[in-house]
Length: 168
Image (cartoon, rainbow, N blue to C red; front, top):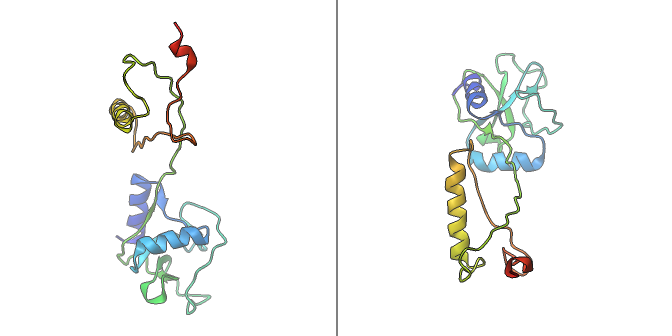
């Protein structure tokens, strides 16, 4: 897409075109670009990120002019310059990367009352069955992808049997 179409698509479907605030984010985008020229959220007005992120990261190609032509107002990672930034005409068509919504991690503690005393809650098959049932219940109530997993204690167990549960 053109830079503007890519930005609009990202804003509609995700959050915005990707911004690069540090070397780790740059390396992630570079890996995802796989050597291709891809649009990122930097544009000239003066140069700023489309999502208005502040970043001191600079990775311009060596041949980048200080006062470049004003018809090249968008930025792509350039395959021919080892992924360094170069200005491009915003009307050129290139792949692009959107910035995704941040993942929200929640830890939820459960208290499960065993109806079948022969059931071993620390059996991986039992745990997987419980997770699947929880995913099915949540899938209709939540927007986005849900990933559920058990938090294991240092001894490898997920569930700790409460002594009060066994006393009549």
